Amino acid sequence: MISIVDITKTYKKRPVFTGLSVEIAAGELFGLTGENGAGKSTLLSILASVLPPDAGEVWIGGKSVRQQGNEVKRLVGYVPQEVALYSALSGEANLMFWGRMYGLRGRELTARTTEALATVQMEDRRHDPISAYSGGMKRRINLAAALLHNPRVLILDEPTAGVDMASRSHIMDVLKEKSRQGVTIVYTSHHMEEIMACDRIGVLKDGTLAVSGTAGN
Ligand SMILES: Nc1ncnc2c1ncn2[C@@H]1O[C@H](COP(=O)(O)OP(=O)(O)OP(=O)(O)O)[C@@H](O)[C@H]1O
Image (cartoon, rainbow, N blue to C red; front, side, top):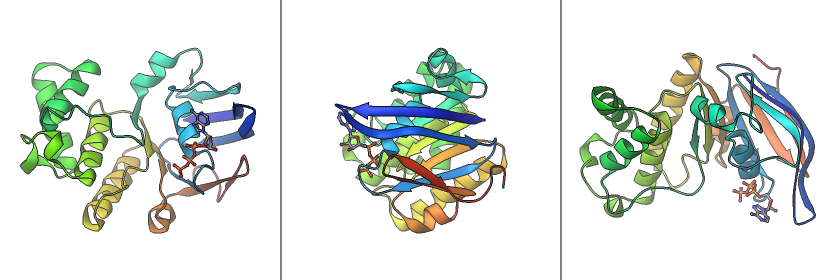
């Protein structure tokens, strides 16, 4: 489902990775970890078609992130590390906004918003403005926004950072269920137990990716 072929990325002459390749199968829950600055967010932004690689190619569902970025974005739900929400609007209004951006309208938009709020257990605070949410609640709404259009691929940059333990374990359950339904998930975390729950683990270090196990396992 995701094919990363020999990609290179350099910031101001400092290489983040050189010649990185990996295949991620449909329905796989792939955990990515590594020290601060190892390049996890950079790799995820490339997969989400937000940042181009300097060289190499990434294919998602057979589409090139370089040449078919807009089609890739339709296939992908992306949660960046920074929370991107309108603080004056309620959680529900933020989700409705994102849903419209994904082309959802009318009853479908309302139903998907309600479903996403339930998935991240935020129904009771749906009408409160984002400015009244805790950091963990904002992360949960950000994750809900990525789920709205039922994407085939989820790219999640530390979706549980700042989230309390009970909600983290609920989010992991949601991700495992999505993966069982065939959604391909690439997920970063600094929590070892969350990484260990993945089908395969990739560790980024010194510009290379060491991967445990075999694709499809
Ligand atoms: N816009 C940028 N300009 C210059 N250098 C950058 C930029 N973004 C990231 N870097 C550098 O690229 C390297 C990888 O950063 P990245 O944010 O991908 O790491 P990370 O593994 O996600 O780290 P963390 O665990 O802290 O989130 C770091 O050395 C970082 O300083």
